[in-house]
Image (cartoon, rainbow, N blue to C red; front, side, top):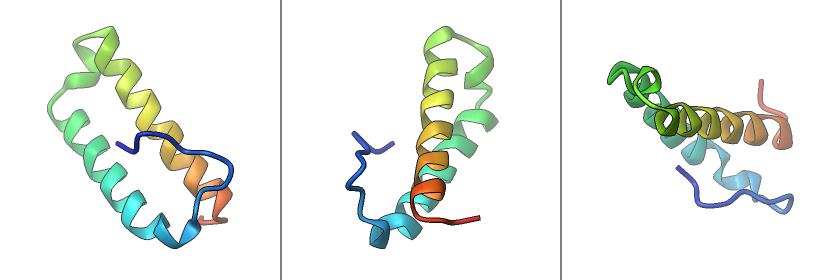
Length: 61
């Protein structure tokens, strides 16, 4: 997961960052982590929010 995303995010990194975030999300879901604790649910939500932020900021559909 990326430490911090800000409005000055560099979209040149979007491809690699999205790939990493999607892999983390997939692993979390496949491990069943999102069902086990509030912490895991919050992590899943944060990763999904980061993916959405990058897609929106960099106009990726």
